[in-house]
Each structure stands twice: as C-alpha cells, then as structure tokens.
Image (cartoon, rainbow, N blue to C red; front, side, top):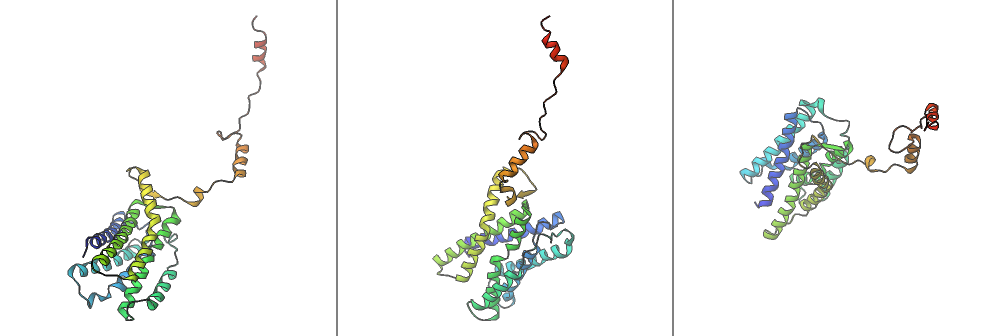
Length: 263
C-alpha cells in the first residue's frame, strides 16, 4: 500500500467520523441528505460482499467492516433515532435517476460477468454520483453547517488522493483500472465547485467561528431591473432616505422680523 491510498483511506474515515459525531453531539441531522447516506450504504454493501470469501489483510477487513457499520449507523440515526430533525422537504433529489443507470451500466461494462464483479462495478459507478443528493440539498438551502462542509471537503480530499494513488500504482506497479479511474474522475469533478466555495468562504470568515457557511444564491447575485430601481427611487423621493423630503412651510413671523432688521 502506498502513502496516497493510506492517506485517502484516513480522509474517508475522517469524513464518516465527522458526520457521525455531528449528528450525535448536536442530536440533529439537519442539513444532511439521508438519500446520499442510503446510497453510500448500498455502495459499501455491494462492494464488500466479498468480505466472507476473499481475505486480503487485517487492515482491509477492518476498513470494510467499519465502512459498512458506519454507513448503516448513519442511516439509522437519520431515519430513526433523530428522524424529527431530518429535513426531508429539501432532500428531494430523485435517486432512481442515479441507481438505475449505474446498475444498467454495471451489467454492460465490467471486468468479468459474475455476480460479485457486477456488484463491485455497480458500487464504483454509484459511488461516483452518490454525493449528488447532498450537494443538491446544499445548493437548494443556500448554506451548509460548518461541520457538514468539513465532511464534504474530507470526502473530496479522499477522492483526490485516490487519483494520485492510481497514478502511483500505474507508474510503479503497472496497475491500470479504467472503470475505477473514470468513475473517480467523475466524482472528483463533482467536488470541484464545492472545493472553490469551501476555500473562498473559509478565507472570507478569516478564522472567526461561525455556525454555517452561506453559499451564493442566484437570486442574490442577479441584478434588479433598471425600471424597478428607478421606480423605487421615485417612490422614495431619494435613494438615501426611505421617506420623501417635504420642504417646511414658510414662517410669516420670521420673514417679517427679517424685513424689519435692522431697526
């Protein structure tokens, strides 16, 4: 095992632990897409069915068990333990548009047409798009809690490190898996926009603790029509005052006093 793969596994594990701790400590799963977590549970289950038939190493076996256990624990917390805090109104991504195409693609494009190999290929394809419901939920609400942002960032780092892992293995071991590399590239590209927002928002916060990271919305960025601005200025009288400026009526006593001065 090379360093990039080991660091990638640690980053992946860190992301899962961050998410579990966030839910458990806050007693809330607000801002977390339950659909993405269900997809990840399906991914790990389909990929690691060889747990009982293929032993590689103690490290490999332990990581498989941890991933499966943590994914189902997260799903249980969202849909059972803290169900009242789950924001299903914003978690509306149609996951069937992800599951069905990746399942069909796994049957058509795989290394070996056997049940375990097809399930492994399906898990690779599905993992590349499983984060879409979470990203869709973040873009729909316009903001993400800081801990949720850290979770997404750690997942992105995990995928990026695995790209370097494949480069390393191809250069030093002659290993090349086109299915895993293409799926990994797709997944990394999906994180690129979030990477930009995560870094820019972090620099804008300047290290000050905040509860959430606001993301730009199209409504906030779109300019108001000129006619609306002009009409509003006319109604308000001036651009700087919410009420029109009405001149005070003349004071007849003051005018007479001025006209009679000097005596």
